[in-house]
Length: 113
Image (cartoon, rainbow, N blue to C red; front, side, top):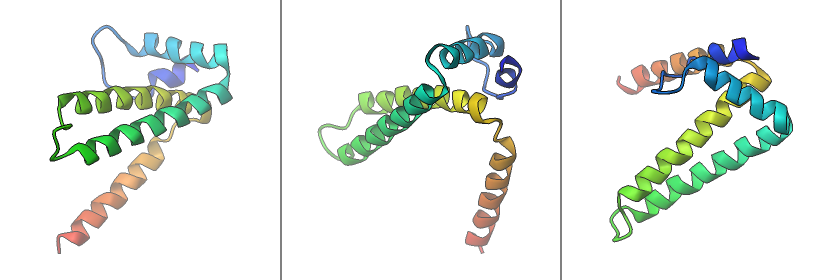
């Protein structure tokens, strides 16, 4: 699994290299099991969804502030982490990403006509 973690292609972060990240992700999967980590991924994606909706509702109101955006970034980090775990569990999806990006590029070109 560590080899797969090194190939995730996540951006370099200060204080966190791919090998260390891979050990952490693999450790969580080994400690709590793949299905538990899949459940965590589902939960984290739900929390991101909730944070995004909360920010959208707050636009133009007194409740709108930078804390909402910071909360979104925090939830995005949780989702990125769990997506990387899903890559270890289910395998690399980069071929699908390329396909989807190329399809989006085609749609953008068609929309510009």
